[in-house]
Amino acid sequence: MLEMKNIIRNVIIIFLIINLTGCSLPTAPTNLIKPPLADASNLELKRTIEKFLPFNARLTMPTSLERSAKTFYLKDLTQNGQEEIIAFYKIDNSFSLGILVLAKDSNDKWNQMQLIEHYGDDINLVKFIDITGDDKPELLVGLEGGSSLDNQLFIYSFTANKYREIANISYSNFTYGDIDGDGLPEIVINKNTRQKDIPITVLEVYKHSGEGLDLIYNIDFDGYAGEILLGQAKSAIKGIFNEVYLGAHSAATHLIVREGGEFVEVFAQNPDIEMGFKPYPLPSKDVNDDGIIEMGIHKAPANTEHLAMVEIPWVEEWYQWDGEDGLIWLSQVYADYDNSFQWHIPADWLNKYTLTRENSENSSLVEFYDLTEHGHLVFSLLAIDTESWEAEKERLEHKDSDYLLLGENKLLAKIYIAIMPEPKTCRCLKPLNIDLGEIKAGFRMLNEFS
Image (tube, rainbow, N blue to C red; front, side, top):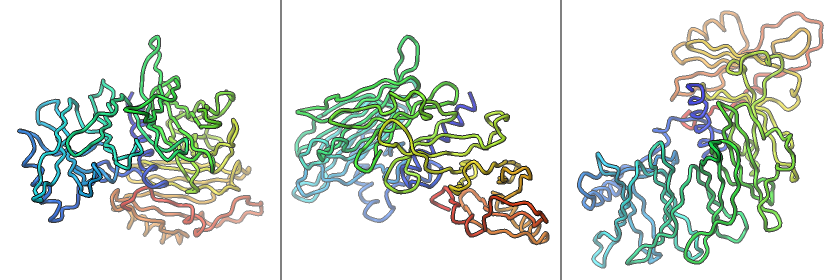
């Protein structure tokens, strides 16, 4: 159970950062959630808001790990040319949440425009999206109901004197985007249910119509609801990438696209597709910044298949959809999320290398070898605690080692070094050659504060 919790934790961190940066890492949640800037205007607005809060209420911000998360926002909800304040609060020692909307009157004074109260544990997400096409942003608020309850997504539309609840949808994960190309976004959610005591993920797509939301597509998958991502599956086709957890640690990725006016699960006719069963969760993302979403799977390096799963130094293998019911291989990446780095493996190394990993209390050493009978060491990647770096540097220089400092992660107090092997006399042909400059070109720190 502990292993599963750690895996899910890492997966959640990876997806969130991926969606923020495309190739960056796991920062701590408290570092990603940023309050409004503490300038004079924001402090004055905060004091104004607090005057309108109910007894024992305090401002709160969404728990979703987004850079835009705040305790309050300034938005023109009514499109009257003036911004309203939209603030979120919790009432201490209760299961009560609230949305406070303030607007300025003709005397330039703030007054309460709306107060919407809910039962819930926390504000999960906040979005301002025009889903109706009236050029006014709707307010989307997700509420957490506690560990045993689904989240609830409420969608509100505002006028000067009132608000209207457009929809209330239960969800586990949420995304949105214009799938059908009509200029208006669809709402996409997944959630957990059970059929005959078997865990099932339900994926649903909603579209605004008339006064509310219409369910325009739904599909079930075996397993527990994981991350969902909406993006380009091909240059002209958007897709929904839905992750599900299977059993203790395995997972699957399902891709749904819209073709000919219909939603299609593209791998349904190909049961042998690798994304149908993955040893560990690996959420989809754009790994090469080309605007196309890739799907990933963990692969065991050569000669490591005999190891226990937790001991295998897994490599990420990334694929793009081929436009039919298959995949196109794109790249391999060695990613160490505990030490916050990754290295993009050269494409011409495919099926020609293996690697080992050795962790100690203050460092992690990854060594890449070729697959010849001699098993030449090609190079090593060392992640070491900053406080241990001077001693390691002295050791390397004493040995006259050829090495390069790849980077320093100040938040995690880590130093990353590439180390070339000691020259040895060998008359055999070495199939893999790389220099320190090429190693550095493929190296990425996975933390925005590095």
